[in-house]
Structures are given as C-alpha cells and as structure tokens.
Amino acid sequence: MTKPQHFETHQYPKTLLLAIEAPYNQTKDINSYFEEFKNLAKANGVKIDEFFSLKIREIDPTTFITKGKLEEIREICEKNEIEQIIVSEPLTVKQERNLADFLDREVFDRTQLILEIFEKSAHTNEGKTQVEIAMLQHRKARVAGKGVFYGQQLGAINAKGPGETAKERELRTLENRIHKLRQKIEQLQKTRETQRKSRLTKNIPLICLVGYTNAGKSTILNTLTKSNVLAEDKLFATLDTTTRELYINSKKKGVISDTVGFIQMLPPNLIEAFKSTLSELQYADLLLHVIDLSDKNWESQIRVVHEILEELQVDTPMLYVFNKIDKVLNIQDLEYQLRKFKPNVLISATTIEGIQPLSDYLDQWEKN
Image 1 (cartoon, rainbow, N blue to C red):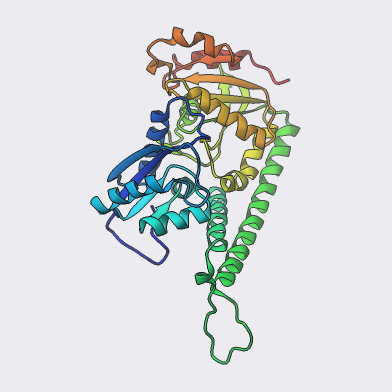
Image 2 (cartoon, helix red, strand yellow):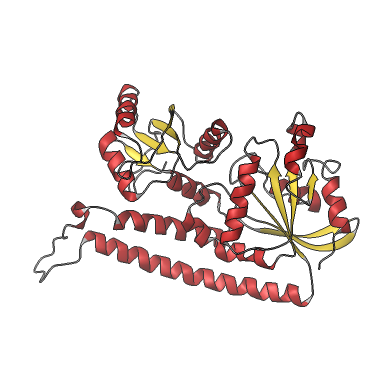
C-alpha cells in the first residue's frame, strides 16, 4: 500500500492480508472471495507476507473485529514483524484509526486498496481526473474524522485570535482541489455530450460492454473489432472507456464501447466520480453483460452488476454474455441456473470461433 505522503522508501513493508467473512457477505464461495482479495493486493503491487482469515458474526462499531480476535491478530503481527495490515472490508474512519492504535500497525481498508489500483490503472486525462476526485474524497473523510490531536492550532507569530487549525486548512485545500477537478470533468462531459448528439443525429446504434472486473470485456472488444486494447488476466487492467466501430459480416452494426469493470463493495466515491463516464450506459441501445462463467461466484457477480446499474438508473436492453466456457468442466450442470438469465449466449472470447454465438446474435440484432 502507499506510504504516507512525503515518505519514500524502496523497501516493501511486511504486510498481513486480513480476510474477513462478514455477516453481510452473500458470496457463495468465500474462498473465491478471499482469492479475489489476494488478487486485488497483487494488482496493487503488494508483496503478501502473511495471510489470515476469520469469520465474524457481528460487526463491532469501534473496531469492526471483536477484541478476542484482535489479540490473535496482534500476536501474528508481533511474531512475523508485520508493519502494515490490509483489511478485505471497507472500514469507517473510526474503525480504521482504532485498529491501527490497538495493533500498533498501519491499517488500510478495501476502499484504499481499490482506489490505489484505479489510480495506477487510469491512463487518459479523464480517467486520472475521475480517480483523483475519488482519492481526495476518501482522504477528506479521513481528515474530517481525525481526533482532537490533529486539530491543534498551528503557531503563528503575532497571530490574533484562534488561528486556523491544521485540520481546517487541509480540508479547505482538499475541497478547493476537488472543486477544480469537478469543473474539469464538466468540460470533458460537454465534449462527450457533443459527440453523443452527433451519434444520435446520425442514428448510429451504441452497444456497451458491462460486467464484473476481469470477466473478459476487453478481450471481446478486441476479438469483435480486431483491436488491440489492453486485455490482461488482472483485476481492473483497463479503466478508460474505449469505443470502436463494430462490423459483423462486413456490415456496420454501430459502435461498441468498453467500460470500467465492477466489483463488489466498489467504493461509492469511485461510482460517483465515474458517473459522467458511465452515463453513456443510459444512452446505449444494448448492453452486453459479460460474465466469467468459470468463476464460482458468477451469480453473485451478476447481482453486483445489476445493483450498480440500478444505482446509475440504467434500464437498457441486455444480453447476458457467458464467457470463458472453455474453462468450465461440465456446462450441462449449469443449464438450470442459466435459464434465469435470458437472452444469453455462451462464448469463449479468445477466438473467432469461440465468439461466434455472440457475432451471430449481433448480426441479427436491430436497434429498436
């Protein structure tokens, strides 16, 4: 994880990944959820020295984890000389601070982890701006939640009255920066709206790829359009929206856009920051909801995507695209579950032959 600002080091701090099965977690396979957590850490360049998992029946409002479990975690930290802990769940400012105090280690939560991955993965001007807004919002909440010790007066010669506290000054700086970045996003949004009006005037159909992170959206875009968009077996490999013209059997069907992948408990600040980009989904004529059928939690992942689309007020016709079927041992065993998600196609996006069912569907599809 990122060290505090103005502190540089070339040596990785010894890290404990703390994976928690919380009572709100509806994941079918908790081990798969924990594996996703490990992959998030790796995507952020974290060297995992120790991994510890536990299940809690209720959440402690002050520390998230009960005191008995905390003693066990502290022993692990002392035994293995752990310097920082990354928690698999989002924490409140109070919980994060209390955990750090009790364990005497730096503590980072799921939100910080995902924000840092987004920060590293954004390459376009708009993507970087969106992520910076989310990072600053997260930092602002942490500053606002700091205790009295942070709010001590800064000394000033001949100062009259109660000067500005360090806390107030940093909050004001953060708010000013966020305001400027939002103005920048608004300008970029105007450019997108101009492009959208041009497309709508010409009646060009828009197809958008959506889905859980690492489901294979970029690979589908590449195979369908013969493009070379970055497609790695990695969480959040691409964040920036890519749009290409789509031809099926030499006939132009419209344009197709890739979008940022979703994940459970995606930080609200990120959803808010990316709303201007994701607003394109509201104007799409068809959503291709890509699902990694080889993932044991694929049904939970569909639910996560539906929830985020609902939050974005997106109600667009959808085709379920079940991908990576080449990695599924017995596809027949899933037939009953797949009936719940119609219409659908089953594909393997890495080859022209494997993606043919999707190509056939799009060949017959017409904009309403």
